[in-house]
Structures are given as C-alpha cells and as structure tokens.
Image 1: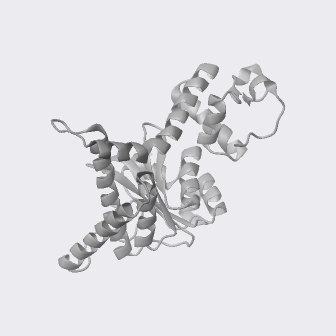
Image 2: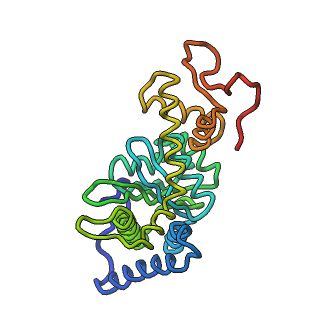
Image 3: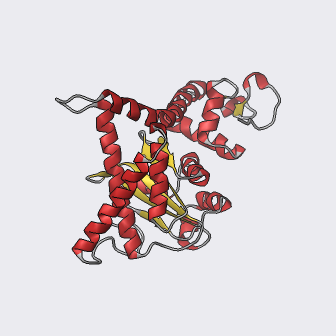
Length: 286
C-alpha cells in the first residue's frame, strides 16, 4: 500500500538477502515478545512494545475495526499509546481513522503546525497535549480491506526514513498475520479442528478489548432509544459528550449502561445529556 503523504517509498533499498535477514529479525522479535509474555492476556501488549523497540518511535498501539465508526484497542505499548488510540475513537478523526477509511498508510509528521495540524485540528491539539508530535498509522489487512491499524507515535516531530518505513510496513504485515491467525484459531477453519488451549489463549487475548467494544455498542443502542436517532447519530452524541467532559467514549458508555447518565432530545430543553434523576453533580468520574 503506498504512503498517503509524500515521503520515502516502501520499496527498493538494500540487497535482497539483507532485506530477507531484516524481515526475519522483525518476525523473530515479535515471536520472542509473544513467548516472553507472562500470560496469554499479556501477549498483545508485548507485541506492541516490541513494535516500538523495532522502530525509532516512542510507542505503538493496534486498533481493530468493529464496523462503521466503531473500533477497539487490541493492544498498546504504554499509557500514552492507549490514550492516543482512544482519543482518535472519541473525536472520530485522526491519522488512524483516515488510514482505516482509505486503506493506505498515513504519516502525520508534525502535529504542531502545518498541514497535519490543519487536517486534524482537534485531534492534533489533544495529541500534542499528551506530548505526541508525530503519528504514523498503517492499515492492517489484505487486498485493500483494512481490518484495523497499527499506530506508531513519537515525542519528536519528523517523518520516518526510508529504511525505517520499510521496517514499519514489515511489522504491519507481521501484525496483520498475527491477527488473521488469531481469528482463524478463535473460530476454527473450514474442515479443521481448533486446539482447546489455543482457543483459551485467543479468548483471553481479546476479552478485555471486546468488553469495551461491546459496552459502546450497547450504549449506542440505549441512546438511540432515548433520542430516537440512528446509530451514527447516537455515537456522535456519545463522542460529543465525551469530548466536552474531557473523557473517552468508553467511559461515557459505561455511565450510560449503569444508568448514571441519560440523553434526551434537545427540544425538551436543558442539557441534552444529564445524570439520571437530574441529580446535581459535577463531571462524572470513573
């Protein structure tokens, strides 16, 4: 897949044998990270940490698409990477969303100024507030169909050199393969069986991510009923409330599901999102 922004090409470079050795090193590093995890649930995080070590970036995350407008964070190398992934989901914009929509790598080399700031003004402002200056989002998938993104962030502004971009794309390919294998192991393959131990590991890897994903789906359904709107409008209301409160969509979704927060049509007057029973209280925390 070609890079969306102008810059270094992912093709060409050193001798074929050198590239083969480098590809093998990438695969071995990710495999070693998975083997070194203390428990199956820690494998995704270990893979993300390995991605960050293989490249001149500060951290990384992997987000999986759950349908139009809905994503879940599968793993993150650190707290900032996790918050950055959730931020893009909350504001509904950013390099990750663009890479997912268009199926091409998106390289935001400087979020503090220039075209990247103008392209994603809200995301850029919030990302810089987290100490992030550059974000590189690579779509995961095959045949142009993106199933998620590998997102890399740096505390320093600047792009990826051509050799680093090649490595990033190889890492992307390895993560895509891992996700495809995970899906095959979880649901089995036609005509074949699935090992029980593998099924258990796969289930534990995705359990935490799917929990947050399911919460958002359920909250969208409740807001649809409360406001008599379609799913996209309901998700937009959740995002708007989350951004206004300085929170994440997942956090607001949990408040809706526990009936600590409800929405009402703006034509009824007052705040379109309010605590149940109009209980006077400040912004809802965790």
